[in-house]
Image (cartoon, rainbow, N blue to C red; front, side, top):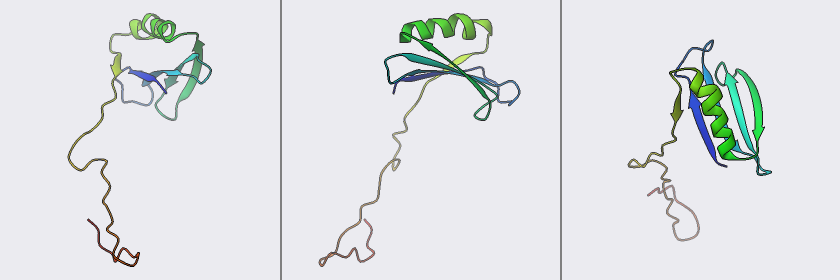
Length: 100
């Protein structure tokens, strides 16, 4: 699923706004307007293309207030992140409690 996100920069539940644009399963693009953080009110609007959705967001939502910013997802590639420890299997099929 393709997704982009904007945030108005406010941490307060009363003034926080988030906007998401997502690729829906039927080829349409949904814009989710969220007011009040994760537990806040949600409104959704559908568009025929990603470009239409983003143009609407930039003209109607982001352009109306000065502090909006796009949140870019980052992936951590630090040492040890996302790595699983391997279990050595002893002869006979038991792990014997040894972890690599």
